[in-house]
Image 1 (cartoon, rainbow, N blue to C red):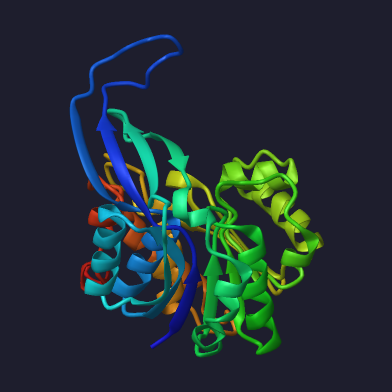
Image 2: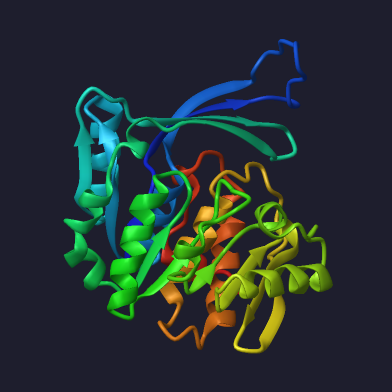
Amino acid sequence: MNTVTIIGSINLDTNLRVERMVRPGETIHAKEHYSAAGGKGANQAMAAARCGTRTNFIGAVGNDLPGKQMLNLLKDEGINISGIQTIKDESTGQAFITVDDVGQNSITLYSGANYDFTVDDVAQNADLINSSDFVLAQFETPLAATLRGFQIAHEKGIKTILNPAPAIKEIPQELLEVTDMITPNETEAETITGVHVTDLASAKQAADKLHALGVSAVIITIGAKGAFYDFAGQSALVPAYKVKAVDTTAAGDTFIGAMVSQLKPDFSNLKAAINFANKASSLTVQSYGAQPSIPYKKEVEQIK
């Protein structure tokens, strides 16, 4: 069983279902409104835990009711929440998600407590990092905190995985130097490399540019087409499973958490881990909401 420590975000998601996306200056009616647990970090932790991974979490919530609810949900899934700070006089992060009738979404974030935990908070949880096979982070929390966590992992030879979302154009070189794997989607890959990813050839071109930045393993998810990987001289597109998508929220997070649950620390089974992650994502997109749609290992294993 793998152990992963996730440095990441915890949000309360407010979801709206609409027929189509609103245009600037326009008012439309929503078909449905509901709240659910979310945040890229928490989603990935939930996916990893539900797929059988021992999961630690380093992050922060506000001293409010949503924060207490999020902590209880994580704890109920067996996730170690000892590294999560409760920030006084700050609210828990929130995401406002709109999903249309073809399953596409738009998301607006309010970071709240997600940006209030520090480098020192990460350093104080070095024991969690040092007990792990992988350390995983995204860009919904402070870069300095992620860098410190990756540096601690790197010193012990623990593999680091960076999910560069939301994308930033210039990732600090000092962070890339301690990143073993990077996992952008096609849009994020284009933001970072300038390459418009649409197929195998363009994915390879983007991967080469990411390798040139110093990262040895690259995975680029390409929506319904699947996931492209490039590592140790081998590359391929692992096809997605064809399903009817109703909500793509948390599909990418499910992919990463599920992949980490299967991945060997030397990445030797990368293709098989990606295939398992594609199965998990195919289940996520068939249900509404972020964490409520993330499947358990037994559900994923039923897909042939």
